[in-house]
Length: 125
Image 1 (cartoon, rainbow, N blue to C red):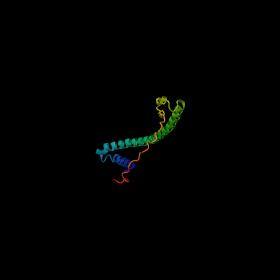
Image 2 (cartoon, helix red, strand yellow):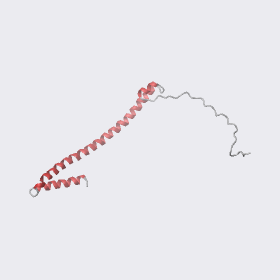
Image 3 (cartoon, rainbow, N blue to C red):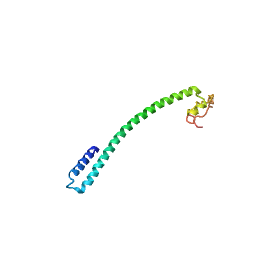
Image 4 (cartoon, one colour):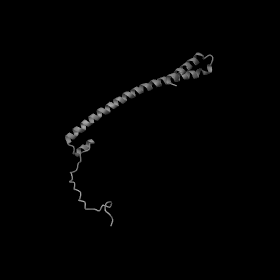
């Protein structure tokens, strides 16, 4: 049952108990407690809606901060690399990885393969 339907039934019940208090005096206190509980529940439901809207707003703001922050951080990192150079160890102070390319090594050509017997095509004597 939807919350509003439930609250509507509780309100009708509490109002009916209050209206018939002379006939059912032993239930009047419980009816009043239900009316109080209903009011508190409605306040809590309203707060929940407000918090949900606030949460959406905060989520949108956080996403905007993350997007703008990423752009600004990339800009700063680029400027720092431009200033100090890509290979400077000073970059580590900013949390950036310096380019540590080693000297290019001369690649040795593979050794010429000696004639090896091919076990598949070589007949066994």
